[in-house]
Image (tube, rainbow, N blue to C red):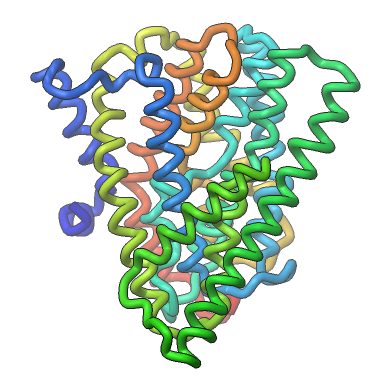
Length: 394
């Protein structure tokens, strides 16, 4: 499938969705029901799994060492663009779609994060890749960071739906869901990545106790880090990405990083193919039935205006070529992370108009898959050829 995608310059995500639509149109009962409403827990767990696999792979392949200066662009995208997206979506949800406050807030929180799963076409390549691209780095690191950073706002929607909006609710959310859970995720991710790096690149190398030979370590580290962080009430998404990043920078030149990246990439693509076939099935099985013109207009506005403008405003003044700014702003790909967050929220409490939210999110993901899938390869090739080398940050 990657070979087909490369030759046609059409993302393999589009091919998988099309295959799913054909299968469920011709043989509707051949496979299990693809509808997330009918498979709430299965939807949560399988999307949760693919997101954390993707986050581990994302952390492992980022070569640029963290500093506020080096990571200025993704930090701007997280701290400004994502919050602006959530706010605008919430306001439009209330005024344009007539949603209740908790439902509108949930819609903004679900759509805000850039998806690490479907963004492979615009991300950096394997570890130690020599090509430097601010566009690819920014989109990769943004996708790694904001899946975890959107979680507090999903929780805010849940607690507001359960308890209403009050000063006590906001204070509890600030202290627990925003500060404590992010801090736990950051610390445990840092600790796990450092410990794994020491074992693999220092202790085992020094004493030859055991020599890791395949990429399964990445999955082991991912699952252990995620599980322990969730048990301690931290954000596992944050921890997994940070663990992958710390492991990557424990010893940057070691060939084993490519083995780790290759293994996670293969597992991720396997799961992605399955999930996108199911997603294609939902499109012909009724998930878009509640969609009206106002919902469709909202989705188009989000993909074409809200995300691009929010991102572009957030990086104004940065030392990046204007073409790269446009690409970073445009390629805010939506995907499996949004499905996970929506299924997670619906599993914790009830929201008004749940079928409407599924229709909006599914249509937004479809727009993103088609628009970004048809343009990513062409745009990235254009940037690679035409951006002057002296304007690409090291």
